[in-house]
Picture 1 (cartoon, helix red, strand yellow):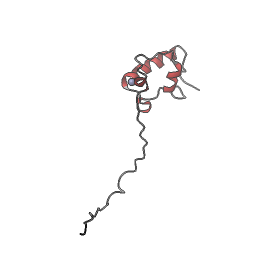
Picture 2 (cartoon, helix red, strand yellow):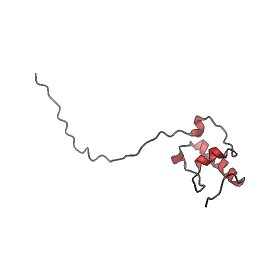
Picture 3 (cartoon, helix red, strand yellow):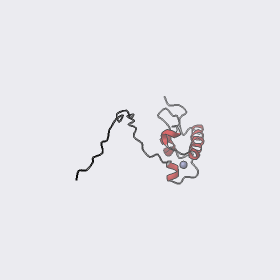
Length: 90
Ligand SMILES: [Zn+2]
Protein backbone atom coordinates (compact mmCIF):
# COMPACT_ATOMS: atom_id res chain seq x y z
CA UNK A 1 0.00 0.00 0.00
CA UNK A 2 1.97 2.89 -1.12
CA UNK A 3 0.15 6.11 -1.20
CA UNK A 4 0.94 8.43 -3.94
CA UNK A 5 1.84 11.73 -2.54
CA UNK A 6 0.99 14.37 -5.05
CA UNK A 7 4.03 16.27 -5.94
CA UNK A 8 3.09 19.79 -5.60
CA UNK A 9 5.39 21.94 -7.53
CA UNK A 10 5.36 25.20 -5.82
CA UNK A 11 6.58 27.40 -8.50
CA UNK A 12 5.91 30.99 -8.99
CA UNK A 13 4.70 31.21 -5.48
CA UNK A 14 7.15 33.87 -4.64
CA UNK A 15 5.92 35.78 -7.59
CA UNK A 16 2.82 36.73 -5.71
CA UNK A 17 2.86 40.33 -4.87
CA UNK A 18 3.51 41.18 -1.33
CA UNK A 19 0.46 43.23 -0.79
CA UNK A 20 0.57 43.77 2.87
CA UNK A 21 -2.34 46.06 3.13
CA UNK A 22 -4.31 45.71 6.27
CA UNK A 23 -7.86 45.72 5.18
CA UNK A 24 -9.99 47.05 7.88
CA UNK A 25 -13.63 46.71 7.25
CA UNK A 26 -14.87 50.12 6.53
CA UNK A 27 -18.36 50.72 7.60
CA UNK A 28 -20.06 54.02 7.27
CA UNK A 29 -20.22 55.39 10.77
CA UNK A 30 -23.38 57.26 10.05
CA UNK A 31 -25.12 54.19 8.69
CA UNK A 32 -24.16 52.32 11.85
CA UNK A 33 -25.62 55.06 14.01
CA UNK A 34 -28.54 55.29 11.62
CA UNK A 35 -28.06 58.98 11.21
CA UNK A 36 -30.33 60.34 8.55
CA UNK A 37 -29.39 63.92 8.76
CA UNK A 38 -26.01 65.14 9.83
CA UNK A 39 -26.22 68.15 12.06
CA UNK A 40 -23.68 70.84 11.30
CA UNK A 41 -23.77 71.86 14.94
CA UNK A 42 -22.42 68.47 15.92
CA UNK A 43 -18.85 69.67 15.69
CA UNK A 44 -17.47 66.83 17.77
CA UNK A 45 -18.63 64.35 15.19
CA UNK A 46 -17.67 66.45 12.21
CA UNK A 47 -14.18 66.94 13.53
CA UNK A 48 -13.51 63.25 13.09
CA UNK A 49 -13.99 63.65 9.38
CA UNK A 50 -11.64 66.51 8.80
CA UNK A 51 -7.89 66.52 8.84
CA UNK A 52 -5.76 68.57 11.17
CA UNK A 53 -5.54 71.10 8.44
CA UNK A 54 -9.28 71.32 8.26
CA UNK A 55 -9.72 69.39 5.06
CA UNK A 56 -12.51 66.93 4.58
CA UNK A 57 -11.27 63.36 4.67
CA UNK A 58 -12.05 61.56 1.40
CA UNK A 59 -14.61 58.83 1.37
CA UNK A 60 -12.20 56.05 0.58
CA UNK A 61 -10.25 56.89 3.70
CA UNK A 62 -13.04 57.45 6.13
CA UNK A 63 -15.29 54.73 4.77
CA UNK A 64 -18.35 56.90 4.77
CA UNK A 65 -20.91 55.95 2.19
CA UNK A 66 -21.72 58.23 -0.73
CA UNK A 67 -25.00 59.40 0.68
CA UNK A 68 -23.56 60.33 4.04
CA UNK A 69 -20.45 61.83 2.53
CA UNK A 70 -22.66 64.27 0.72
CA UNK A 71 -24.45 65.11 3.92
CA UNK A 72 -21.15 65.39 5.67
CA UNK A 73 -19.61 67.81 3.21
CA UNK A 74 -22.65 70.02 3.38
CA UNK A 75 -22.59 69.89 7.17
CA UNK A 76 -18.88 70.68 7.33
CA UNK A 77 -19.22 73.55 4.90
CA UNK A 78 -22.10 74.90 6.87
CA UNK A 79 -20.15 74.51 10.11
CA UNK A 80 -17.25 76.38 8.56
CA UNK A 81 -19.49 79.18 7.59
CA UNK A 82 -20.80 79.35 11.12
CA UNK A 83 -17.20 79.43 12.33
CA UNK A 84 -17.64 76.16 14.17
CA UNK A 85 -14.90 74.62 12.11
CA UNK A 86 -11.84 76.24 10.61
CA UNK A 87 -11.51 76.70 6.88
CA UNK A 88 -7.85 76.24 7.16
CA UNK A 89 -5.83 75.47 10.20
CA UNK A 90 -2.50 77.13 10.63
ZN1 LIG B 1 -23.83 56.00 5.38
